[in-house]
Length: 302
Image (cartoon, rainbow, N blue to C red; front, side, top):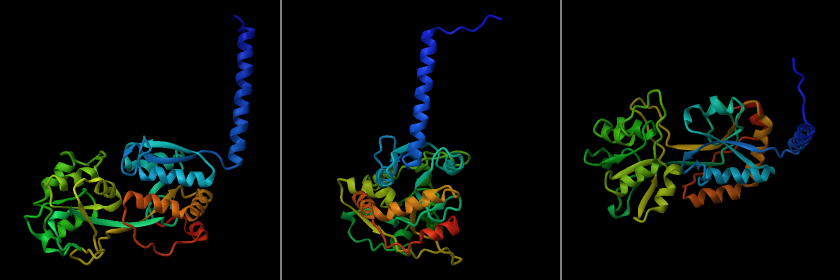
C-alpha cells in the first residue's frame, strides 16, 4: 500500500486548523460557563404578527429583550409546521425556548404568564354601536350577519352553539383555501380575516387579539375592536374560554433556564409591556404569578 504523504503546506494547514478548532472550543466552553451561549429560540419562519425570518414579529422583539437581559445572543431555529414544534425541535434539543406558549401546555415547563389577552369582535366603526359584548348578541344570531373567524378556535365552537356554523361553513372553506387540515398543516392568515371586514365579505370578525391587533391598528379604515366577555358556554354548561394567559416554554428538564427567564421577565416587564402595547394588543390583568420555586415543584402548568 502506498504510504500517505502530506506536504509541509498541508501539514501546516492542518496544524493551524487544529489550533483554531481547539481555540474555538475553548472560547465556546468559556462562553458557556459565563452563560453567553446563544439563546436558541423556536420560531415560525412566516408567522406574522408573531415572528418571521426578517424579525418583524412582536415575539422577535420580546426574544431580543430577554436575551439581552441574560447577556446572550438570539439564535433562531425556524419551523414551518406549528404542530411539531415541541416534539421535533424543543424535545430534540434543536432549540431551547418557545415564546408565546400556552400556560396549560402539558408538554413544556412554562414561566409565569407575561401577558393576558382575549378574543375580540372587529367591525367597521361606521356601523355604529352593534351592541356586541358576548355570543348572546342577537346581531350574531341573525342569519344575515356574516361572521369571520379562524377555524379550530373558540369562535368556531360558539358558532355551532348559536346555530350559525352551517350557514357560515363556506367562509371556513374560503379561509382554509379549500384545503382539509387532515394530515397537514394549514397556515391561517389573520390579516386576511381583518381584510374581509374591510372589503365587506364579513360584517364582523372574531379573532385572537394578539393575532389581529397589528392589522386593526394599520387599517386606513377606522375599526372597532371590543374584547369578548369571557362568559361563553356550550349547551351542556361547559365553559368555552375566550381569554388566555401567555408564557414562555422550555423543556421540562430545563429548570435553570426557566428560572433565568422568570427573573428576566420580572426585570424587563416594562420593556415587554411596551412591545405589547405598541403592537396594539389589549392587555388584561394577570392572575397572581407563580413563584420560581413553584415552577421547580410543578414542572409544568399542563
